[in-house]
Image 1 (cartoon, one colour):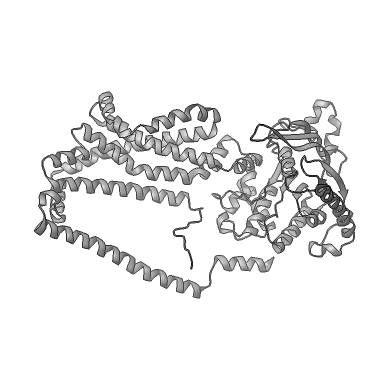
Image 2 (cartoon, helix red, strand yellow; image 1 turned 60 degrees about the vertical axis):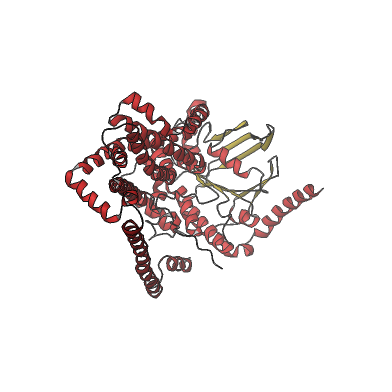
Length: 285
Length: 284
């Protein structure tokens, strides 16, 4: 018993020598991985700049220097900030509401067989509609202001979260539920200490895959009809052949998605710290 | 199980105190003509258990042996109230089990620790209904973690524990809230022989201290003899009770030298005879 114990401890806490070697390998990787990454990005930007100077029309492809200039101007005039704020609002309302509704419905479907059997075909049929095609309808129903875009964002977010949460509920191990109930867990404890943690990996997959889609929803809504917002800004700039501004809009959107994903990733990491993480599967031989 | 005093209904109130006493004659679990049939995918019925009759007195260590698929696990699920009976009834402290039987602890085949809770939270999971003050709750959890030899691993998540450690944790999780009856479904099945013996030894040691009623399902004949006061032998589908053997070995027992202990050979021999018989029938 005592011997078994020390073996287990040895497995969990490697000796200092082993750790030093591992650390050295890690620090080497830490240098060359970002180095190559920077080189790739730098090379691409350099090629782009060169192409627009010598080989192609700048109004077609713009160039990194022009884009930086436009961006600075956009921020200085406050125009870009305003449009970004408008788009951000649409997402900030539509995304969480869509995610929460999707998760709640997925959870209810998982809990109630009747609900699932009645509504599942209906939901699947609705999911078959290309949802961006509904954007014009939302404009008709909710006007060209904020709420029509919130509607599109909601729609795109909702289904992804619903399907992922529902998938999580269907693979939920009944034995965990049985054990918890035998140990006296009531409805609340069962929901918050057992079921939600068990399906959390699925919920986070839903949330993280729906992040870029929520941004797509906002932009599509703005493409259809709007007087402000990044989608409007991009469309208008393209119409005026201000290619650099188009790229500015795209870049801001990209950073929006990255920022949202990073926040979601942070929360996920914290919430799922119990998971044994496999970053890469190593196949030997 | 909804009523605190199930016996008052039948008018035997006076028995109440006697009934709860370990070793008293009234059984803690009484299985009467229990039958369980499952629907097969082609709409037929498969009888898993047929006419099971079994009395389990307080504080007894009962093992249930039989070939795989004989309905051993189903019997445990019925006692726990996890699945409804098709016929007959099961009484717990004199009251028929109609819903979930939260008076029993359950140790499943795999550890099934909640992976999102750390070791301490897992072991303390069943303590909530006891409404202990925080300090006592913590003490109780630590006490059982220590019994399992896992002190120092309180904050570890199940994924960070080895198979044997997880198994021990799974057992003390069921013990920690001190249910009078513990159902174990081949808990040592997937372990290697050494770890298995160590855990059997630890289980017996814990049981010697607490003397709960244990119903332990296994397909290992040596394990069945080594642990049990009584062995329930079951037959293949439909599962019936073939025989019940009393193991006449004194306690405490030494698991590591179990073969040399007085009475082991006799008990094992009788058990093996029954099984050999069973095998012959199937061959014919």
